[in-house]
View 1 (tube, protein in one colour):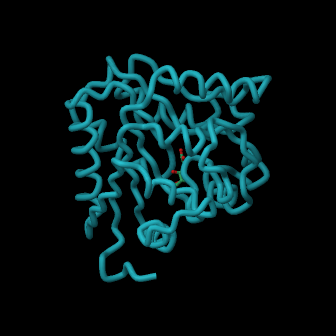
View 2 (cartoon, rainbow, N blue to C red):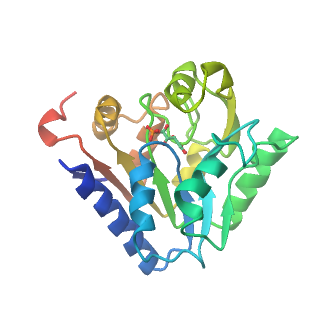
Length: 234
Ligand code: F6R
């Protein structure tokens, strides 16, 4: 894992854009994307570039179960608002939050990913170490699957909904193994709330209790963070 530390968020996001541009110029065509607060400044910056994804394919990490693509809190809607309306891809894929057969939907999404291996995967990290919606305890062998969201994750995401009761209780997510197949992974860990869990990952803990720690075994991971070296001790 290569870790790059920034004292300025502006510089961190500029670097993220530079990495994505480089990966694309090097021939990447399949991009795994993420949602969440961390990615908003990134997508805002990408919108200002002349990067062209019109011949690329995108695959999002996750989607809530029970929300339509037009629901304002669905990840399909988020992607449309923050990126796709400005930077359309040739085709963009997310699990269908309204699928009748959720097990079949997860299997279908995993099939798609296996047919089109990801050249690149963008990741945020949850305070509990989750990546995608892979909560602590998820098997490192997991493929795309249905998850019951942890209360802490629902609470963290409740800020986007009127009440916590509206936050879905289930989601689809790429599994850890699905994520680990990507050729290059860029993880953004921005903000104090992410520092404790990032320290555990950087200390090379390798445990399913910290899903992001699977990344310590991936050959090509870049982490961009505002956690400074001097704050790094556990
Ligand atoms: C979103 C996702 C999540 C987020 C994580 C951090 O697609 O996969 O794992 O990356 O919950 O979210 P923020 O950036 O809102 O702190």
